[in-house]
Length: 121
Image 1 (cartoon, one colour):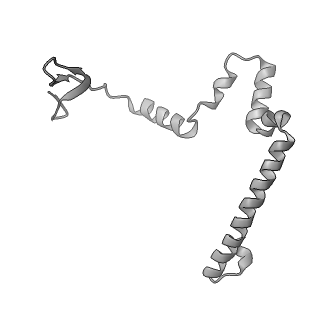
Image 2 (cartoon, one colour):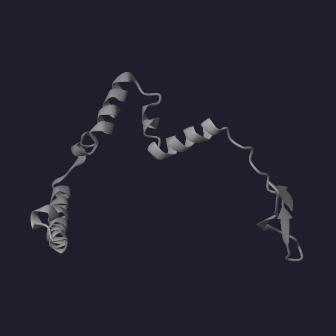
Image 3 (cartoon, rainbow, N blue to C red):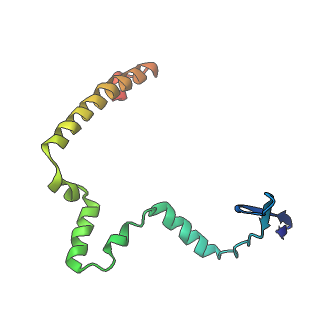
């Protein structure tokens, strides 16, 4: 048991049982408060760059960084060299399937809203 901001706490760790089968209480330390700007920086970084997209650039030569930058901006440059006819066939089937469902749905929603069906597309 302890006190944090006027509240008591007690933590139990499931792997730390006593010999008689009762749970053992362990103290849990409260992390120190993080400065506001550090916390805000971490929050913004996690929001806008959740997977740290720039990590691929670290330790690369200038030429390799240029290629990676182009691949980051234009992803087709990364996957196009390995694209096959089987992928094209699968993508066409998927596109036709989605279109056959989405186009009538959009037209129907436009009719429900009493607007011209063209706006549903």
